[in-house]
Length: 93
Picture 1 (cartoon, rainbow, N blue to C red):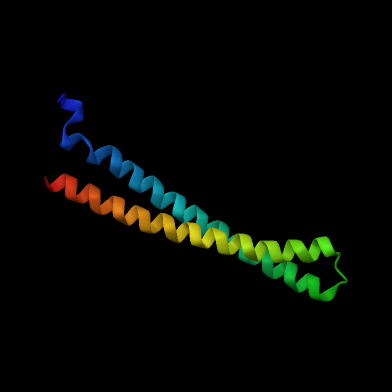
Picture 2 (cartoon, rainbow, N blue to C red; picture 1 turned 45 degrees about the vertical axis):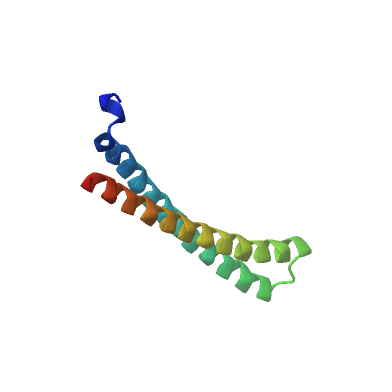
């Protein structure tokens, strides 16, 4: 085993992945928040006007996308927590 393959060298790159995953999860949450605002505005405007079928579909689609993004953020956070525990355990060895 070379020095680059030792268990002690693993946590640093993995810790970088953990930190990147945390940032991505935060970015996704911000996108969800932005999409929530867009959905609210479209919904209100949709109620005021006589929207086209495309507009109605777009409003519904924003809700679906928002839900999918929120779910993805949760899954990423869960995976990051598992990875973080692995990194911590590797560092203790």
